[in-house]
Amino acid sequence: MGVFEEVAIEGHEQILFGYDPVSDLKTIIAIHSTALGPALGGTRFFPYKSEEAALNDVLRLSKGMTYKAAAAGLDLGGGKAVIIGDPRQDKSERLFRAYGRVVDSLQGRYITAEDVGTTTTDMDMVRRETKWALGNSVALGGSGDPSPVTARGLVAAARAVAQKVWGDSELAGRRFAIQGVGKVGSAFAQQLAEARAELIVCDAYESAVQAAVENYGAKPVEPDEIHQVDCDFFSPCALGGILNEDTIPELNCQAIVGSANNQLATDHDAGRLGERGILYAPDFVVNAGGLINVYDELHGYSRTRALYRVDAIFDATLEILNTAEELGINPNEAAIEVADRRIDQIGSLRKFRRDGDDRN
Ligand SMILES: NC(=O)c1ccc[n+]([C@@H]2O[C@H](COP(=O)([O-])OP(=O)(O)OC[C@H]3O[C@@H](n4cnc5c(N)ncnc54)[C@H](O)[C@@H]3O)[C@@H](O)[C@H]2O)c1
Image (cartoon, rainbow, N blue to C red):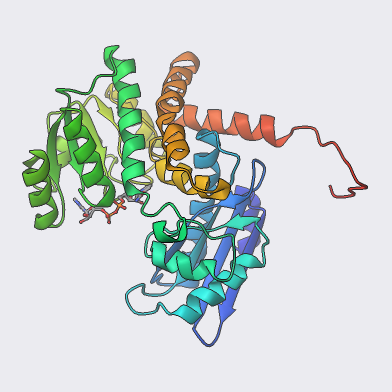
């Protein structure tokens, strides 16, 4: 499929290709929607096998950001950027500064932040060329690593699910099976341990598992067994696509709340979960804490305000679960419905012209 056909289907507003021959920067920025505000989304630095693969990824991810921001009730649209390259070898000051100038050329229509393969230090470098780079170091007034805040949003979502399923938001004594105890998963384990929940964990790295066992009293299981664990919550905090036609019949949980993006392998899998009576809290709703945190930098970062907004993931999750029940649809469809409704209603607000403003 050609680029224009692809854009026509998903309704992207703009795609920008940036190249710097000296640093070999190859970047694609996709703005999916600015209906609710500037398009915010991270920069993924990844050794894509082809330019087509990079383009497909940025188109898919930028659309996802539109829905994540809309469902979280933020005044933000959706966008994303990719840089084609190996993050372990191809990073340089020149590359990030060249990238910063490409971002700056969009004058705030797109705002970037860190993502897979980029760090707060990288964003500090981009920031030297544009004010439209967030996720900066704490020392520079930024919000730093978003992972503990993302984990806090997961706790809020799990409480909302507990409220819906058991009529009580208390998490003490609830069993969580966490797949992946990396940056988000380990912070989630810590906060759940503080809430006196029971933890079962796995990770591809033994040291990560050991840390969760020693620090939070978690029980370890093998990575290929985690989704089968008898538990209240299964929490995918590693990779996408974990909820699929092979794993769903093997699940032994009541509900799913996790940070991983794109947990459902296909849209049909939301229906499969429903048929098994497993309540799925949509990933893009429950993992919005990192986005909410970075968004706060736009207003001069206040951790108190950011956490206050992240805790509202409790209400956002409940609203979606209630909407699903009312409309007889699955929670994933309900989340899209809630986001679409907001984009429609707020994005179509009447415009009042002033000062000879002749823009459309
Ligand atoms: N960091 C954030 O604030 C944030 C925000 C929103 C979404 N997410 C998403 O949450 C997920 C986790 O993010 P992170 O920042 O913690 O990444 P991370 O790389 O720090 O952690 C992922 C962990 O999963 C482990 N892992 C990988 N494959 C595994 C497997 N097959 N079985 C078990 N463990 C496996 C890795 O060893 C690693 O420890 C990602 O999908 C990410 O896109 C993160």
